[in-house]
Amino acid sequence: MHFFKRRRTVAAIALVALAGSVVACSSNDAAPAGSPATSSGEQVAATIGLTYIPNVQFAPAYVADADGALGDGVSLRHHGQNEGLFTALLSGREQFVVAGADEAATAASDELLVVSPYYETFPVTVSVKADSDIHSMADLKGKKVGIAGHYGEGWYGLLVGLHNAGLTPEDIDVQEVGYTQQAALAGDKVDAVVGFINNDAVQMELRGMDVHNLDVNADDSLRSASVITTKKFASEHPETVKQVVAGFYSAYAKLKADPSVGVKAAQKLIPELSEPEQLKAAEATMDATAKLLPGPDTCSELTEESARKMVEALKDVGIEGIQVDGSDLYSTQYCP
Image (cartoon, rainbow, N blue to C red; front, side, top):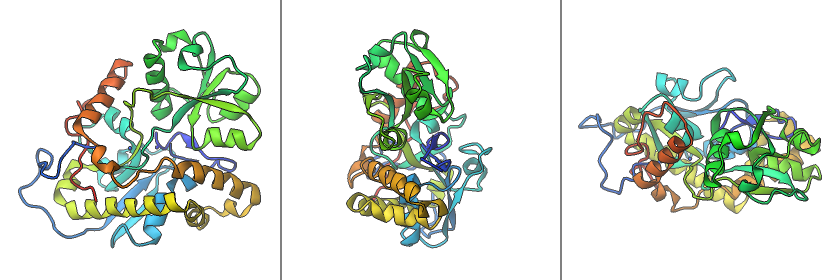
């Protein structure tokens, strides 16, 4: 989400946003290394970190919280814009954060643990005008590609997409356009833009732009937004982790059945959604986001194999400083 540093929503949407585990633990997987022999069987107070300002893409958290599904004493907190994605989590100010699993893999820590997907499908895409001569990632060679910046899920997605197409960043002209993807593409300042299928692509279509979206994750190596905690907290408070994960899954099911529930939950936190244009944009974003949410069996897909595949993909494209090999980045032992 970063999952979440890097995505803005629409319109006012200056309301930014975001931007998904697990040691393929089977039901009899052991707790992470260093876990105490005994742990708390009771729920404890916990804070779930969400990046930056309220956004409809955080609807699963809002709905789960409003329903009381996350458990007693569990609250939500939006980060400040100058705060590191995992700073509060690693310092103990937060006990969970919604962020990209790929971002957890590249964080300068081996203490992070992905306990649930937040999106089932990697949301990063490369958008081009529908009448463009770009029909695949390979066609980007020699083209200008706009991106928010050289960081986070958008950057990782572009790198992996290029790699899968036999290209490198040196084969394209990367342009940092900040969060002006729509204007950059509409004004022909770039030939393609990197954004999110449930946000940037949706907003371009709402504004009458006919776009084609390219798949950057054709090899299914990257996992996006996830619910992340620390190995220490998970081992000491497994019941709290299980309740939080169950709460998210309850919200996923509700939102997949009726996305409007998410918009209504977000309206309580985002006054701008009382404006018709903002509401229309939020509804479109929520409809697209609901399609990305995990189904009932997806938590079990957070395997060691998939984690290792993601880590290797990130290393293959030159991401440095990765301190994990994927062997204990995901855990399914907290799945519903």
